Amino acid sequence: PSQFLSFIPSIILSISIRTTKLPLYSTFSMPSKRSSRKSSTFSHPTSSSSSPSSSNQIRVISYNLLSPGLTSPSRFPQCHPTHLQSEFRYKLIISKLDYELTSTSIPVIFCLQEVSRSWYSKLHLYFLSKNYTMIGSSYGSQYSDYMGVFIAFPINHPFITLIECRLERIGQFVYKPPYNSSQTNKESHELTSIHPSVKYYDNFKENFKKIMNLSKIWITLCDYFYKKSEIEMETENAWMYSRKRQNVAIFLRFQFTLTCEKFCIGTYHNPCAFWSQSVMLIHSGMVINRMIKFAKNGSEGWILAGDFNIKPSEFTYEFVTKQLCISSYESGHLDVLPKDEESMQKQAEESIEIQSEVDSVYVLFNGKEPDFTNYAKVEENPMFIETLDYIFIGRNQW
Picture 1 (spheres, rainbow, N blue to C red):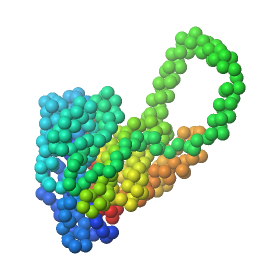
Picture 2 (cartoon, rainbow, N blue to C red):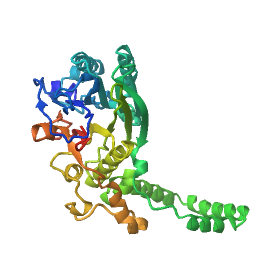
Picture 3 (tube, rainbow, N blue to C red):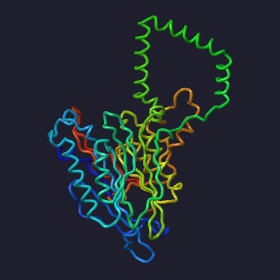
Picture 4 (spheres, rainbow, N blue to C red):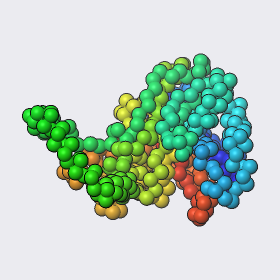
């Protein structure tokens, strides 16, 4: 377990964008496998050759670094304490990045998750020394060392050029009822029709009565925090919880210098809301739809890589890869909206249904996902060996 804890196995993809409008029925080649890292290569034949030039190829690597803020010995009791130290793990990560940067001549694009604040500055300098740059967002809390997601890519490369970038907090796109301006104006008029001094005096009297009774204060505080916890944990409030999440997606648009073909790369780290499949469903559907929208509604080739925190056996995975309808959800329906929004349930569900066909790269190559991308013994929990990381692509685009 110690050696696995030094990194979460990355998913690696070497890809060639098609320069014609042919479907993806190409020859496949598999490089030799290396220690617990899995690699796949595929390309699309051009009209003149079955071996595409490196000038229209890219290599994409998705890598969850595991933030050093989350690697305490108490959290991973079966690992040697030395193997959990930040500097020890950082050196191992750099050795893996070095290998990827020197093993090929084609452009390599790194999609990184759980990049902590303490590692960001080091990684930024490291990538600059390789003529790379990083774009991303640190949105986590102090507990996780303010971790976030980043994409590292070559600058001044002869084969590819960055032409657009966008950072989006996915929670802000989660469905909300239409803005009711007439109701708001009515409420505003009712408030302003009362003279401010009267309104503030009445509020003061009511608040003064409440704070005079200490027991009521205690009850109010307990009730507040209890209800706040309920909102965050109970599945019937999955929509509210999903809206509040700070997780950020990165979307980049590149162009091949030789062919002028455009393609899009995205990365995301889904919320770790394992207690609520509804939250995972909402965020997975929404981030993929935002990726498709960024890629000109799927007219440009796109790749979305990251840690989705979903297993291949779960409904959310099939929802993404098989374009299932919400109505086929095992519980009969997605968790309902808050009570004052229930009439909008259908519109909310339609907003996260995948807008075009999606494939998982590893399934295309191997017929199945990797055996695992996460291998860890956390605290007193059973050993966790599962696949949670994926590279999704638009069907027949590559």
